[in-house]
Length: 261
Ligand code: IPD
Ligand code: CA
Ligand code: CA
Ligand code: CA
Figure (cartoon, rainbow, N blue to C red):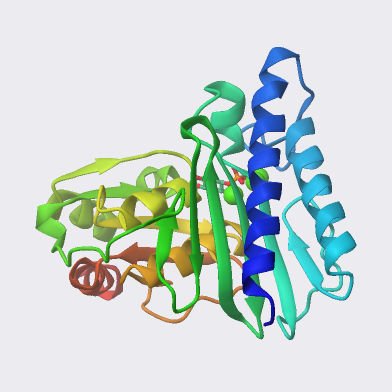
């Protein structure tokens, strides 16, 4: 992909602008709708942010395809060529209920491989990004490769959906760790593993836009990001995921794939 620096400049500008517009929306009341159930919301700001990002991409890169959460994505049947994967607000429920712990996420993939990734923690004004093969950074400061801690030496984030089920293997992972945390934003939870605040994040069912940006950032700092059975992520469907340090990843996959007796 040509012109990485120019793209980087543009995407950075768009994502920061999106964050500012979202923050400004706190001043007024915004429309909130239910999607599949009362915990699955979409707001006026999810839609506006996505529209704004799409408009900018179409203006600068008219031939490239866009795969975005609040769009119909009818024509995305493969990831050939350049595909932008967008989650306008990751953690919409946090955005609505807490006005905190949500992120704007943009990733650029080429032939199914992550090339550029952006996760903007709006309320902390922290923009994490990664370019394939060049590592990851936060607000322009390079992030170190993660320390390869085992499960017993770190905190684990587990999606609430997994803990509400009768999943003994997940409970075992929780017990073996130092403790469990739940944030409610796949992107931020992946960033917390990427910066060493957690050793792992496990989720039951993440969509391509929940995964795309975080996966590249995580891999650029030495983490392993796979499906819960250890297989490669499929960015055309929902995946159960494990993102973790190499040591914790191995242990977690072992627990999750062991047959319960
Ligand atoms: C959700 C969040 C949440 C995860 C859900 C996602 P959204 O994204 O990342 O933490 O558990 O599976 O759908 O809908 O707020 O963009
Ligand atoms: Ca959503
Ligand atoms: Ca999301
Ligand atoms: Ca979203």
